[in-house]
Length: 80
Figure 1 (cartoon, rainbow, N blue to C red):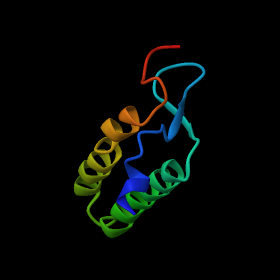
Figure 2 (cartoon, one colour):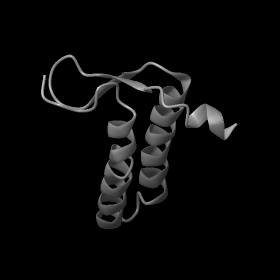
Figure 3 (spheres, rainbow, N blue to C red):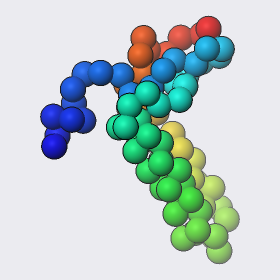
């Protein structure tokens, strides 16, 4: 099963304008995007009574997987 995750093919298209990853092109990218959204939603739901802590952990959850998005984007990230 791990060989499906590390096959070397890109998971995301590059954005047509701007900087960053575009939409997923592989199932791994869709799983990554869905789990990223679920992580942010889960953290914000769990910490809704503590706004300062929620802000910190939502920012951490938002920025933590960016290196993986960058590594799995076809052609890398650059300004377009």
